Image (cartoon, rainbow, N blue to C red; front, side, top):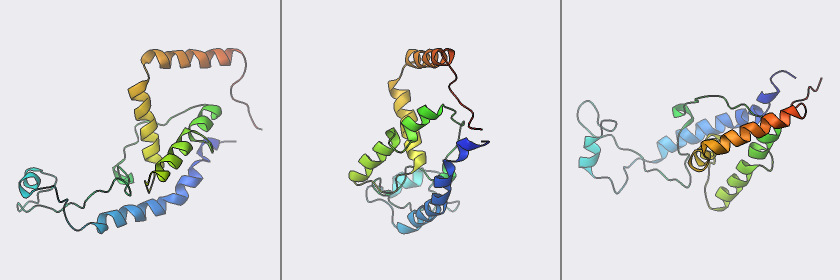
Length: 155
């Protein structure tokens, strides 16, 4: 079936409106700057200083209830291509990211976003895996392919 790898996006698309509203609510919710920020520090930050020299107040960030980065600021670097079994193990109904989301929610984190989970798994892999680990997994997949077809046509 063409574009079957896009079927996972149905769930994400239903949440796009909710994410946008959550982000909008997050930008409107905080009207004061963080208590720890002093005026001189904020005045030195060009992102927080207006053309007339006044300091723009930045809403306080709550890591328990707000995403780490907004959708509009996210930069997709590359698509990730993988075999169905690999994707199921990572982002399936009982995959690593599902378990991680459950753990985060039990620990009081709200608004757990797929983009944050995808970033977290790539970050964890980058910090933990070596080039040799990746090369070994690569060779393993090639060996599996030599023993039979890894993708089957459903037609």
